[in-house]
Image 1 (cartoon, rainbow, N blue to C red):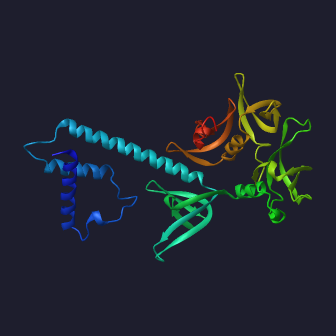
Image 2: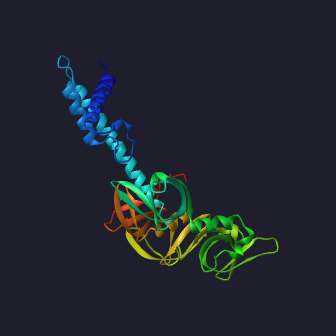
Image 3: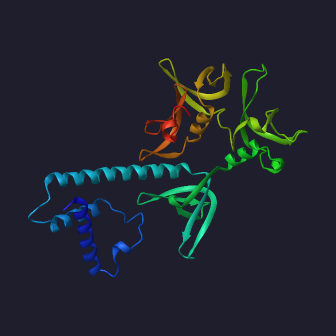
Length: 323
């Protein structure tokens, strides 16, 4: 008898046996996160297989070992998938999502649109809390629309005419504007004091007394993103820590100005996003870490956890080297 035939025969016998002791056939139940095959189910199936094997042609050791190896590989793959799902769920906090979830109480499917406020794990399965009053599994999410500030940024870049009515005043933006030398761009970060439009309908923000066109904005937030934030970096063999005093663009390369020293950074937005994670808890490779700082090394941000674990920001976000 082939392995496939043996497994099919054993599974049939198990289902027939359980059906006589219960009111419903397990095979007819819907598949859920909790009743998929795990270690206990596999061992129970294997023991049943040994009980019903042909005594004249018993299972050989190599077959037994091969099945255990297959199960170990499957279990490892399931663990990896679970960790990736958990990491994906935690990355959605603060983002607007569209979810479709079946409401058993009302016997209908609800369309939900809101901000993910927290994530809870139930038996390893991530559930998202939306707007603080609705909870749905990660699998219910249909689309991630980004943060509220991301949506404002898209509106800015699309130069919509009704932007005067958008509550941008008081928010902080980052922008790259033409430099005074006409060659190198200049980095600006600050609070929006005024929103207006020129004669051509272009949206203009007044920031630190400077005019910034909507198309020049690269980020929107509720507070300062880089300026004044503390980072560390290696200067020779010495580790230096201090607040970011500004961003300098020289020869098409960006530098963070810290303690009078220019620290090269490949992507300004990656440094910004990394600093946003300070004082938050993240999940990486199945472990939870509280981020307490950011170090710049070789132009890339490194997240520093409270147990001094170093987590490359690119690796955490799944960013390829050429992105």
